[in-house]
Amino acid sequence: MDRIRITGGRQLNGVIPISGAKNATLPLMIASLLTQDTLILDNVPRLADVRLLQRILGNHGVDVMIAGKRPGESTDNQTLHISAANIVDTTAPYDLVSKMRASFWVVAPLLARMGRAKVSLPGGCAIGTRPVDLLIMALERLGAQIEIDAGYVIASAPRGLQGNEIVFPKVTVGGTHTALMAAVLANGTSVIENAACEPEVGDLADCLNKMGAKISGAGTTRITVEGVAKLNGARHSVLPDRIETGTYAMAVAMTGGDVMLQNARPELLQAALDTLAQAGANITATNEGIRVTRNGGGIAPVTVTTEPFPGFPTDLQAQLMALMTRAKGTSTITETIFENRFMHVQELARLGARIHLDGQKATIEGVDRLKGAPVMATDLRASVSLVIAALAAEGETTVNRVYHLDRGFERLEAKLSACGASIERLSG
Ligand code: EPZ
Image (cartoon, rainbow, N blue to C red):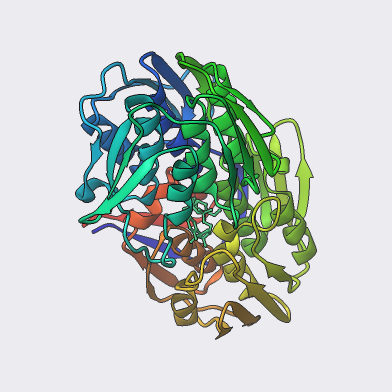
């Protein structure tokens, strides 16, 4: 199993190209199931999760052709030509769905286009129980009949889905994706209330509209979808990854230095950038992207609560905690989205961090120095928080189980070492 070895203590200086967003790419690829025509996606990151979803879609008969990068592109991003001309199987089996929760989202387009879908329940996950009750509720509101049998959700709508009002009692990104992908081909109009406002929902709605859907209000809490009989192919470029952006911004705030996060868009992560500015980083938006610097002064402590967009994202909580381990004072971070997203705490403690957990609230007492040690990656964002801490720790840190990182960070070692970090992958 690959490991990553980091020797801490170096500043980061240079340019980091930001890739297309993993969490936008996955629902966009799944939306290809809604049409017989080809959906072309540009700016797709090269990630393990993208390759896995390609396999999952392949099982339904979807053909994915990968074209190389276009001239002038600064990242390794790829273009996918995705064709679901013939859906040969409407079942998504346990062995595939259990590897990646987002693959459960195929239920909506399969049901909308084929009138039926049988999709394995995704099962437990390291960051909390993560149920799918609200996704099922949304489908039922649109007239689907749902049965749960032997670990599978069996959905059917032989006469098609019917537009309706869907009110989410709690903000859910996957629930909103599901409602959108089901409502676009329903008869009549649907209104989604308390919809997620995350930029990835907006990106999905933009792409669906290019495919001929009639969606308005995406990016607000009330989305209206006028159902259409059929969707067409389209070409769409995936938006830049706000979590990758925030992660590298925190890495620079941690080590000090001067880095241009190329292609990054500040409006996708304003709350996180405001927090970083409070912590002492200088953030400047330019035509090229976001420039992050920290010179001299130390890291100031912050008080943060994770929230749905536009609040501070849960997917940057672990990275912020790593940064706060070196703050001059005491910080608090409260996690409100997932009930068990603090697995990085124990591992950060191995590097010398002082963190006290009380339910959903972490109190981080900044220390003068962290010291390198072997640590274990537990989930995607937790793993990268260990990398951030290791960049500032004295001596050598080895991060084990890096396959978690490969799910969501494209060429992490290459991007960081190009800016002066001492980081390398050890195979086997
Ligand atoms: C998406 O997960 C992201 N995944 C997550 O990123 C992200 O952390 C999360 O949204 C919140 O922003 C992808 O986009 C692939 P939710 P999702 O439905 O859609 C509860 C990463 O590291 N809930 O918005 O699964 C749920 O338990 C990943 O890239 C229900 O109760 O999250 C949670 O407490 C991790 N019932 C809250 O809602 C449901 O039916 C928000 O979850 C669905 C969700």
